[in-house]
Image 1 (cartoon, rainbow, N blue to C red):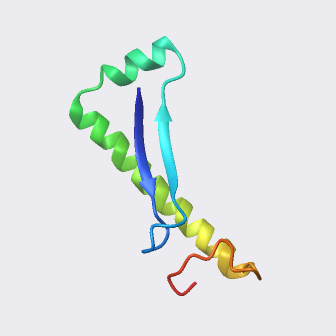
Image 2: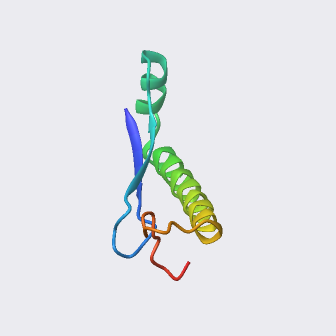
Length: 78
């Protein structure tokens, strides 16, 4: 069982990152699959919030240490 959210730090849809909560054993698989839809959505929302925080960190790092080659460019004026 996986609950996944994709992250696109730029409007160009590149780079493209994915956050996934994945079960790795039977107990966690059973836990995730037994969740009602509303709770799965709450987990998805938490992943989205975490993704927003991660993108913020990546942009800050890029702003402080821009790549001379342009690799890792985050587009949005940062």
